[in-house]
Amino acid sequence: MAEAAADMAHVLVFPVPAQGHLNSFLHFSTGLLRAGLHVTFLHTDHNLRRLGAAAREAAAASPRLRFLSVPDGLPDDDPRALDGIPRLMETLRTTGGAAYRDLLASLRRRDGGADDGFPPVTCVVADGVMPFAWEIAEELGVPAIAYRTVSACSVLAYMSVPRLIELGELPFPEGGGDLDEPVRGVPGMESFLRRRDLPIECRSLTETHQDPLLKAVVAATARSRKARALMLNTTASLERSSLTHLAQEMRDVFAVGLLHAMFPAPAAATSLWRHDDGCTAWLDGHAERSVVYISLGSLTVISHEQFTEFLRGLVAAGYPFLWVLRPDMLGASQDDALREAVAAVGEDRALVVPWAPQRDVLRHRAVGCFLTHAGWNSTVEGVAEGVPLVCWPFFVDQQINSRFVGAVWRNGLDMKDVCERDVVERTVREAMESDEIRRSARALAEQVERDIADGGSSAMEFGRLVGFIKELSR
Ligand code: UDP
Image (cartoon, rainbow, N blue to C red):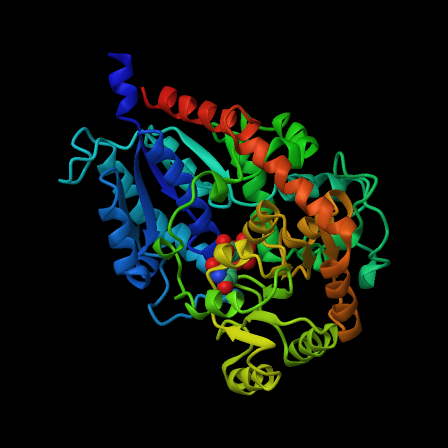
């Protein structure tokens, strides 16, 4: 009887409508489906329209998965780009939150609120930077878990911001002071964390001003103490110390990564851009570990000067390179000219694409290193494939992720805050040629493989999480 009820566990997952979050939630959903649970994946109307047939195909392939949507509160022609993130998060909370409340109220009814054979929603797993989503769920009597799609170390850093302020480590002295000064107030990181490794938004913090993104993430992190549990896409062996410290603050913590490696799902189902299909054929034509792959994720923007420094540095390093330049990354007016500048390097030596099938690229034998912005998904995708990383972090969690790459895991180098051509050339060369970095990257990948294999820490944690969800669903 109890088992029958548990089998009807039905999780509504609600990610932030941005690429990294969508991918991460899709892999998590795939794990839940494999465990026999039902999943309602809540998109925004805008994204669900943009995904179109790909989402419909993914749902058709699994009778226990459906995609529903709520408005994000922005006009349809809004670009939903980097500088609009705080506005999007606000309208998602207000307009989206109201629609989500109505939808969830109907989906938790006995008939599941829709005529498609799905049982009532019994649990919500909401993005850990959207506290409204799990707080509304609990108000409606649906137990809710917070899922932060970033590293445990970055969550711990955000959680420590009030303490850093208390200790006088934040704000930084006027003008930023020496960014290489150590930071002592983030537990477990005293020996290697510097001011420049904290989220970049800390640099503009003053007695009277706080960056809206920093403020929102710090507040969400504090509020996640109230969720039934915090779930993270990491492994015990990668982030043991941060996980131990977080466990002291949260009701429960589940380290269930690396989800993309445990539960691979077709990337197209949540990809907001169309993958360029030519990458693999181009890579096929290159020797083993001879190519540099460059991608700065879905949100980073770069200036014309930064583009030029990257390009000159890459050309000087002398390896063929595959470079993802999203159309919205450079500013439309410059886009064509910059693409032509890369094309001038020669088709054999350089391929530029608007969006790549990243996980396939990283798995390809020709890729020798990954120049990344150190977004958490990109970082763990590189870690899982044992590819050396060169990090050029842009914002939020990326500054601390890249510090872990360079100083803790040592599976790559951290270029933080500079992208001068000679630095690009030197770091790319070192990542391509250093046996030590390659060995560390390989060892890290093997360690993660053990974490996710049967009996490994993440596999056990995922089993414990499914049991926890079933228990909450009774
Ligand atoms: N990605 C991709 N193709 C690309 C660039 C990125 O499929 O050309 C995927 C990548 O595999 C990752 C996600 O987009 O899963 C980016 O997430 P991440 O956390 O690395 O960075 P964000 O976009 O959030 O800054």
